[in-house]
Image 1: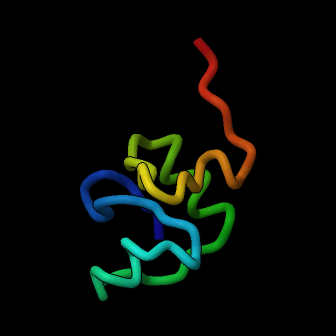
Image 2: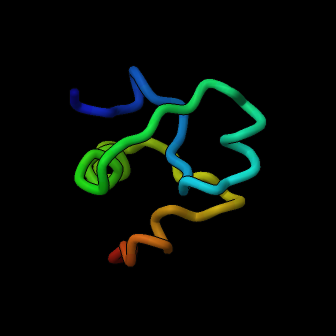
Length: 59
């Protein structure tokens, strides 16, 4: 399944309190998360999965 802004609200790391609080989160592989972030899915501002995965925005 391709994760994008039409089917995912945000991406979190596994132990994010905000993800646990929502109760709507599902596990995803590293590849799915990287693809989702590249397709414009927002990274959680609390747990920063983009930073945890070593992804950096290039200007």
